[in-house]
Length: 272
Image 1 (cartoon, one colour):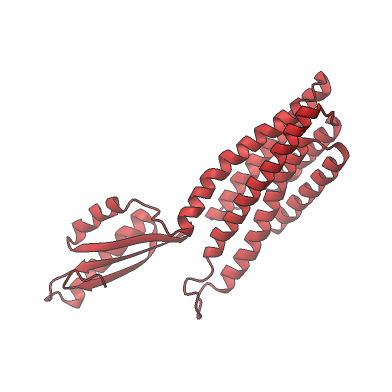
Image 2 (cartoon, one colour):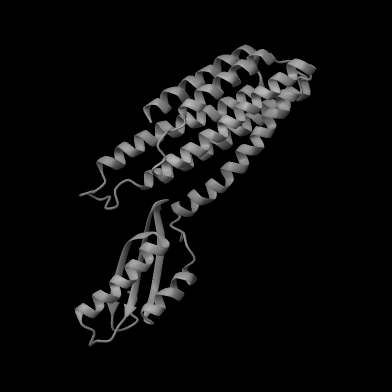
């Protein structure tokens, strides 16, 4: 992670220098990608540090600080949208003014960013966060290759309008990637169910017909929680109740990835 942090920092700095030299909208678009990578890694390192230190919280945060992951994700997504709007404005302005930009700066910066990004991709992809970061960096790598190709085309053809057009294409790709992530993060933030309740209920009632008042939500993308009530006979023994509870927990854990389950037994449908 430290290697990725350093390389994405250098990538961002190289684009700042290149944009200062050329004022290329496409370089600005590539810089937005690099900056988001850098911010994502920076926030992730900070969040993971706090989460690791508070995995078992003895205070008010009984689930630790996993929700920080969602907050960081939403901050990154809003940053993507904001930077994309800035790039779009710059690109349209460049098209209207018929600005001529340096294709050499675009070629060199895109090539350098491609090399740095290739080495920045995490070698280990043993958890969801690292796999997501890997996919994001690889997509940026392909974007830098596109920037390099457009720079070559401008150098050969002299059509400088390809620069802002390429930037607008990257902006569209940014929005295409950001909107689904924003919806997913918003669902987690609003404690929406990550799975269809009706599907779970259909399987749970096979274990015990008296199951009701089911709630499922996510603390973060890999920590899912469920609570439910079970109407049982007053004559049900503790051993029998524990067997039902075990079957419920096994089903939710193995099929739906729900790791925290609270089961409340009752002899009436009192949900209070």
